Image: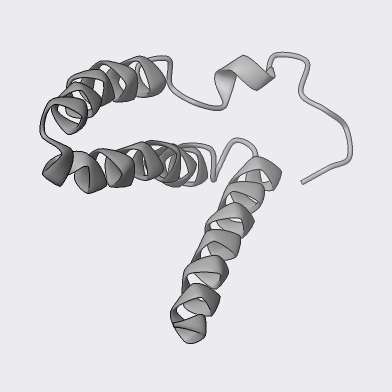
Length: 92
């Protein structure tokens, strides 16, 4: 892991191009169902939370050998999310 940036590696290469469009097109009907059936709105919100979480996991795994700094940043973000859920659970 040298301090020299890779000229062939850009921010657009970090996440596979299919992740967010897939998450969006799955989330759109889920949110519509949540609007039409308010009892299911909680599931829609959880899905919207799950999309960026899955993206962070994918970034951490896919980029581990190519750019470890990006993978570590994604893991730190996931750790921060876990801390928020633990603290939230303690406050109840």
